[in-house]
Length: 191
Image 1: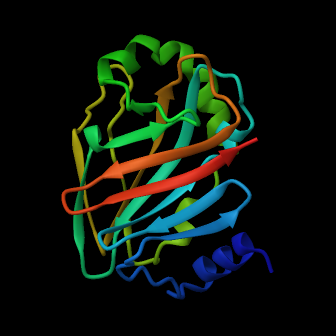
Image 2: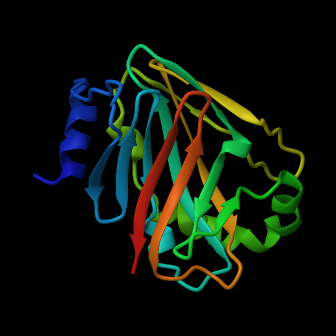
């Protein structure tokens, strides 16, 4: 049985078989060809990079990220603590809300295609965790926040976009999350 089918079965049956205990040293698990789960002493994250894998050469890297706190923990994810590291080692922060709004119209087609490519990331967290959004980005007139609080009853996610000078290239990429007490690095390969 594939991991996706097993996760769907767990959701259907309402079972809670996922444990997200604090992990030291950090853990990295492949959940499929374009999805990984990583965890450390503070948080666990699921990264879906399927859309990015199919869009090499684009000016914008688009990935889906969901985060929750480790069991019996809470954590704050600050917007300015989330970044991408390119294969050549360049650290690129999330664009500002103002920059996002300036290209919002241009990104709409890609974001709609990313909706089709996305996977059910929530299946890889315990079913007891309430879903929420980061709200780091919003369309015109929308409300944004500079941080999100997660705990062992709440899992938040968002589609992240990064402007990549020279376009998205094949190689090893890393989504980074800097926290108050630790950091989480989530490597993934685009080929």
